[in-house]
Amino acid sequence: MAPDDIPTPPRDRPALPDRRAFMAAGMLFALAPGAAAQQTLPGHKGDQGMYGLIGRMIAAPGKRDELAAILLEGTGGMPGCLSYIIAADPAHADALWITEAWDSRESHAASLKLPAVQAAIARGRPLIAGFDSRSETVPLGGHGLAAAAAVTDPT
Amino acid sequence: MAPDDIPTPPRDRPALPDRRAFMAAGMLFALAPGAAAQQTLPGHKGDQGMYGLIGRMIAAPGKRDELAAILLEGTGGMPGCLSYIIAADPAHADALWITEAWDSRESHAASLKLPAVQAAIARGRPLIAGFDSRSETVPLGGHGLAAAAAVTDPT
Image (cartoon, rainbow over all chains, first blue to last red; front, side):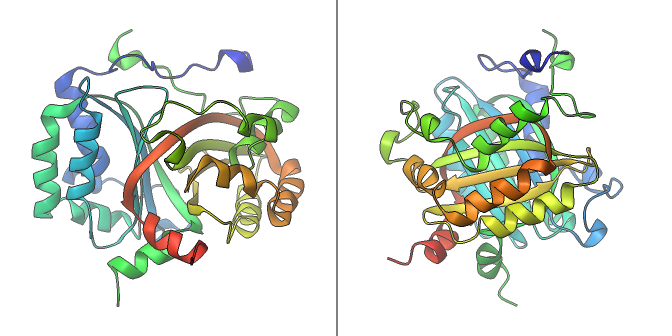
């Protein structure tokens, strides 16, 4: 494959039908319990490492701002959350990038049980049209993580 | 295109030859002056909005940790940098995800001129084998941005 031919996800329409899209989107900001129990990935620090997610969600047409607001309102103050940033995709009027960093995979899984997160899922579901990218990561460090950790985990 | 056939970048080898790879990688954490002067993207807040980057870099075989360390050392305390997180890709032994949020496109462009960033480019160049994903974003908000901003921009 030539470098210029690197395939990329389609940018002009949702890539998944509604039901599957929600399942995938739900896994991004509220990983399903079954998925949380999967084996530890071969990351930098193993079980003791941080846990991250990078994904792109497609909102229903014209609903990006509304969906972003729901995600932002429903995901503040989550224990162990080191970074949670919602960004618009300037190349796609309905796409949102969501990047997350957690102190552990377990903290991310535990966030599922927070009433605010569950409420965000319920409110956001009808506004999600698709989901075309999702990658787990093992954050190694950087700027913004420690300051955020101090806010969410004062111990 | 069927949902199951969504193409994704190759995960098992660098996607770009060395010279082009460095050019692309350099654009991620130190956008070239010419690129910085490009037209403003149709983002959420236009010129006054935040500016973000999400990209995946492929290190030379076995050099991921070394490259990550260089990126982390060379990019601390950049004015206007709201978040800069380096993460390992658990699915690719040599891949790093880099996610950035800045208070403006201009702050990101200005960071190019910082001696520490220029030194990081020079040190990191031989360790970069490829670069297979790069997306600009317009961060809308989230957790970790404000705390980071207070550290880098005390005014």
